[in-house]
Length: 263
Image (cartoon, rainbow, N blue to C red; front, side, top):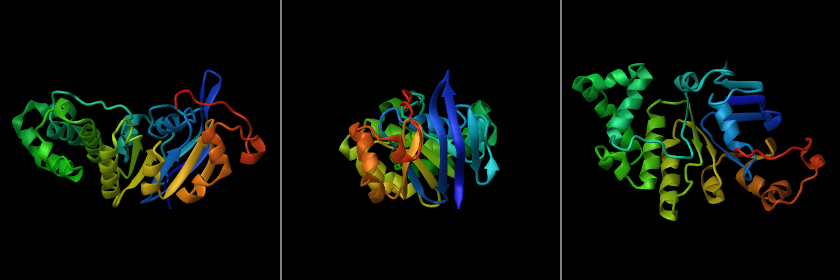
């Protein structure tokens, strides 16, 4: 059963179509990965699904509910949380403070949370539990600026998990990581996926192969191929897209198009 679905999803930027009539079905409990060459429309599609961009056409459903046109904050409260390609943390705040703030925001308390020590203590224990889930129990009181890059990414994942999302969207979670951090991140995602649905944008195909139940390949803002990892990586259209070999429109069943400079 699809927990997240899109039908005919499109986004235009001043006459340029970055996402072009995309249909997407994400099965509940799966890890669904979006891949494609640079400029394929992956991040733009993420921004549409999470309400950071308004759709030009089409429809988005979360657990059967139409969320088309809702803003990012409302979408997150309904159970669709995301991380970003670029880390965005408060350098001086500790891990437990970051997560406690996310927990408070989920209740609507927001920044009022900081007005009393009692409120801080109220969220410390559940915040510590979230940090333990992502392997940061030992760094709960460490300022974010002191964390290694891979651990900063884990903290951002903790912030998303604090929202208790039905669907977790991860935008290039291993970007900029060394091999050891990539391996740790793959292991982490493999653990936290239990009982959750995960949608990822990812360039590292070894990560895709290790985690994906389903892979959607985008090219020029359109779905080129969809299937299992082994099926997709052997498809001649995918090989041509990654090697830069032109694919005749008849091979995809769609018309022509141009790449998405926004990714």
